[in-house]
Amino acid sequence: MPFSRFAEPDYTSHVEGERVPNAWFAGDEDCPLLWFAGAWVANWTSVRKIKEGEVTCDLYGFLTTSPNRVVGEIHEKAMPVILRTVEEIELWMTAPWEEAKRLQRPMPDDELLLLSPESVPA
Image 1 (tube, rainbow, N blue to C red):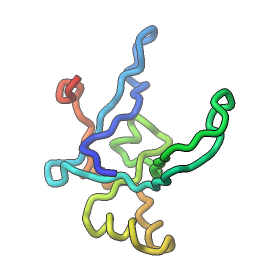
Image 2: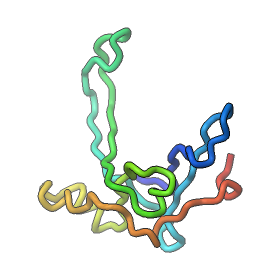
Image 3: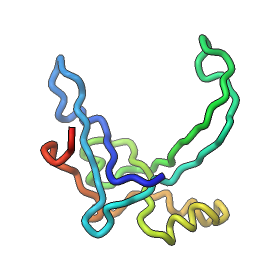
Image 4: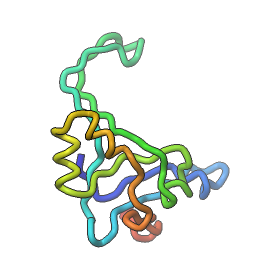
């Protein structure tokens, strides 16, 4: 799934009584468009909410990994697996799992930016 930035709840900046703000992350100038490694399943039938009963929907989930230093300052448990090149996308989409799973690693610290709140459109 392509993206230009993503957010994590920023509990380090939370003011009691207010909503938790988001911290926004983006690729550096050399790679403004990135991709989440994930899996998409069309027409999955299951019970997601007891009150709704069985439903059929399209699902997407993305793979996570341990955070790099940039994300770890905000979210210490995990970050999305981010694909940066056409070669990585091709590997994720077509390779056997034994090869593709090597992509489950943090993005290098120097390739991901923590955006200032002023630079994120409302």
